[in-house]
Image (cartoon, rainbow, N blue to C red):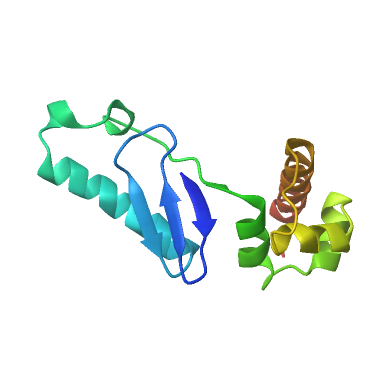
Length: 127
């Protein structure tokens, strides 16, 4: 599911399963709405009409476009912190956040890898 931020809400759509859309005031609400959309498909359609992706066990992969990610997580991580994690300077991150420029795939990958490294480090810590 691809999650995107609009001016007043978040929305999501499936890239590989027709008919699954969701919306909400935040990412958690969008995720809950996604599961509700799947539940309604299964409730209201005969199983023969269910998309193959949601038959049996399935796993949802959540994706965010870079500006939506930066906007959503800016309340948890500053651009200075993001710079340290990704190696991309704050000014460039701000350009992505404010949609003045669109990151190339290489830059998007750097952001994702930096965030994953940080998350792995956090997961390895016990208090």
